[in-house]
Length: 74
Image 1 (cartoon, rainbow, N blue to C red):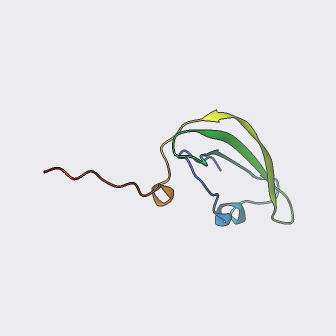
Image 2 (tube, rainbow, N blue to C red):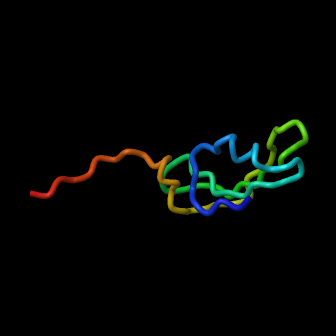
């Protein structure tokens, strides 16, 4: 599975959709502007393990975007 938007938390449902041996590649963005490229491999017991592979900067998944105040125009 290749995710093309930044996520702060990986939904476990994405891991469940893959067979053992499958991989998830995604930009992990613990902060709003900077993140890391991540690859996780799914093991037979349903655990996903992996490593950080470099830096990444992507638009955040809409449901995981922080709620910032919107300026009011008068």
